[in-house]
Length: 200
Image (cartoon, rainbow, N blue to C red; front, side, top):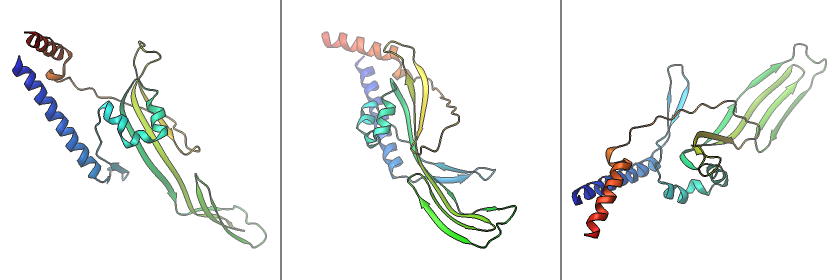
């Protein structure tokens, strides 16, 4: 039995060391960009793995929005935060009928949630620059209406830019089989025999 306890602890230690090493590598890695066959760009980044206690102490939990979202979950399974900046270089809008006078206006508008620069004359409007910044937080996990209530797998998403709304979300979770040394029966057995050995 002592051997089983030692083996169990050894497995846990190895898993913990692997997690720590993976987190260090993920923090030091840079986002990679590649293309799908249709030319669509994909941004890829290595993920971090935390225990619940590590998550509570992490930098991401200092974000008030992240903390508020995660507090609505009984169990948090994943948190994703990313920043986007939608850019348009040139957009031309030509009038069907030109205005019967010559003029030209060059101006720009800079707000928190959008920046736009444009030219306007009797022929139409040309948007020379349009930027729309946004940051997104996605939290996935289990929610309960009350402490003993049924668990519901849920994904919440929020945009910092009030002009951007999520039209639809589809979240699929792939479950893996529990390893034998992580099974509840094995842990109960180890605990029972460990307690018997300690009392003798």
